[in-house]
Amino acid sequence: MPRAVVTGGAGFIGSHLVDRLLAEGWQVVVVDNLITGRAENLQHLQGRPDFEFLRHDVCEPFDIEGAVDYVFHLASTASPVDFVKHPLETLRVGSYGTENALKLAVRKGAKFLFSSTSEVYGDPLVHPQSEDYWGNVNPIGVRGVYDEAKRYAESLVMAYHRYKGVDTRIVRIFNTYGERMRLDDGRVVPNFVCQALRGEPITVYGDGSQTRSFGYVADLIEGIWRLAHADYHLPVNIGNPEERTILEFAQIIKRLTGSDSPIVFQEFFTPDDPKQRCPDITRARELLGWAPRVSLEEGLRRTIEYFRTQV
Image (cartoon, rainbow, N blue to C red):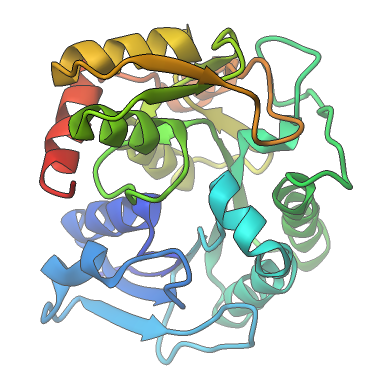
């Protein structure tokens, strides 16, 4: 029975990955300090002999007793609300946290997968974004603490691969939504869905013409699972290339929730907010045989039903 360590495993994406690993017959140890993760995301796993939880900040050195076959490093803040609230923690988890996770992989002879982000492309000047695009990032902007932490972490992962022989993978995750997102997450889906369910105005920043490509969490986890088992070490985009404007997205959510909420427009609240975001998934298609399968409406219906229990 293979054994994995998942840092950030109490988070939105991390907890879904933990579920997948357990379903595949793995043992899992989650390491999370719960700064943005939630214990309730893992509550259904308590008492299982194949699951362990260690509350710890990965920015501080740590070790795991026994064998470890794979380290999945997902620990990080992930939304504008969080990395504005926790800027230093965001930088540290991308630097110290990533190196501590890599050192664990070295000690255990384990494989390593790093969850990077489409934010490494910044406010892109190339559309759609392929993995060979180096990005357009403001290193001293408000978003820079997240963007540059992930860019540095990618460099660190590749250095450990090239110079220490660690068997590494890098997944660049594009906008993902689904069950277990926090109500106060600050990203588009929980914002719009919660406002619609509460009958509050749905707030669209700018004129709503900026685009995003929203992927459902189950599709993302399938992509991560396939990449984890591929013999490939350079970054791979995992996201849904179906591009929608933010205004379109607000209209879809309003329709699916049956809400009477008006759509209102406000000035941008986050500097350097990308105007376009869409993945080129050619590499994922060719290398992994992966493409998203869950439609936007089906994924949103599932997500909306989850949020109805939370609002």
